[in-house]
Length: 203
Image (tube, rainbow, N blue to C red; front, side, top):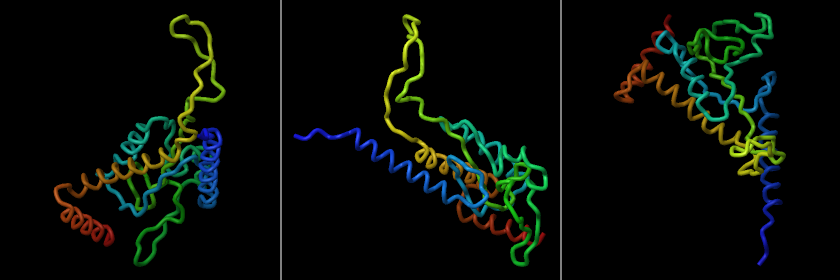
């Protein structure tokens, strides 16, 4: 009976995942800051004061994902390093569309409200804590210094975190729509949404 070569299998899997991540990073939109992982939800309705908590609720939900250490909307922290002329999104108007923006540095949120642009959220995720080259630690009983245990269950959790993040974004947006347009019946919600869109289109 041939013994499986687990080391080679893990190496192949790691290489496959790393190639996939590299490919995704290479295909990000031109000019977009590098991100480890980015979730996007398109075609949001322009907001109002009842959608105002979206920014806070969304950030709190994403911070609730284990290993997430940072959340950015649009330019995020990069906005603090640019002058205002390179941060704020110019406003325009197009017949048949209405008010538009030439860029989306705000990431679809202004003043905590959705503005009709794509919602762009980037997360920073910490590395998996178990290492092949273990860090120093202390024995819980003897208090003597020692090395942390060597173990590895997987090599990269970013793809899995992406799935969780997209679900979190969808849940928060669905909740915001239900609070704004009602949650008793889907047909009623869609009618209320259509009426809202017609009203703001005529504003």
